[in-house]
Amino acid sequence: MKDKIIGLIKLQDCDSRIKEVIAGKKEGPLKIQELENELKTSLMRLQEENDRFEQLKKDRRGIEQDVREIESKLEKSSIKLNNVKSNKEYKAALKEIEDLNKSKSMMEDRIIQIMEDIEALEKGCLENRDVQVELNRKFEMDKEEIEKKLEKLDNKFKDLEKQRAEFCRVIDKDLLSRYQFLKERKGGSAISPVIDGVCQTCHMGIPPQQFNNLIKGYSLLTCPNCSRMIYWGEDSHYQDVKNA
Image (tube, rainbow, N blue to C red; front, side, top):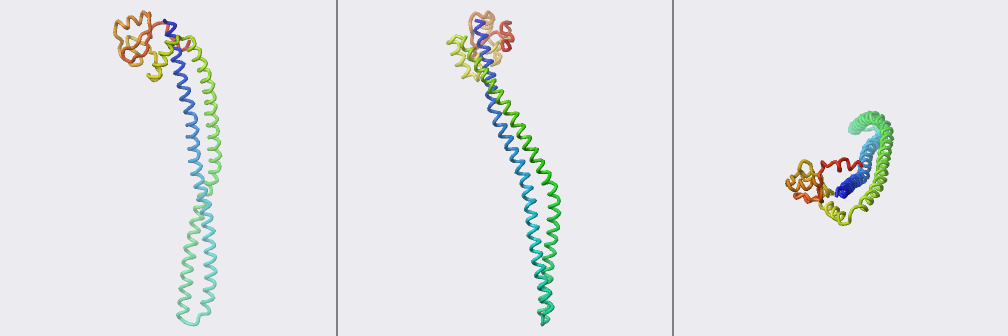
């Protein structure tokens, strides 16, 4: 009976490790996706700064063109001022020149502000290129590391599947069916040790008489509380079975 229990303990440990590997294999792609999202967010932020830099340069060119047009109008207005025939026309020409100069002054102030903004952004945009290269490099390194881990998990999964097949091969069919039934309905835990009279999975006490029978080890018993198969965890035969 003890050999059968040892076989079940090994099988359950193998199934637990398979479960961990499967969880790890699912986590890997999610982590890669998370890294990709972080990279995209960072690159979008850098691109927004670059776009603003380019837009400011475009705005500057546009305003400079407007200033040139105003200067052309001022030149024409000055010529007109010299050729006016009446006081009314003279005042109108002066008002036109004054309005053009105000517009020109406002535009030149705007150009100065844009130039200051461009100067502030220019250094940042140059640094952004280096940051972008570093972000891409780090992403590729992290992705490669995760892919290597996934490859190791794949190999480990194959090895564990082979081990499981070996464990199943030597366990009685009826006992294996019972194990599978409990495993599916008990969250993957079909057999549990009992220590100091307490089931170590459901943490409920075992009746004294049943515990005495468990210690004798003549038959495979069931926990009256959680219905899992149980064994005396303090028996030396079961010590370090997982590492055997």
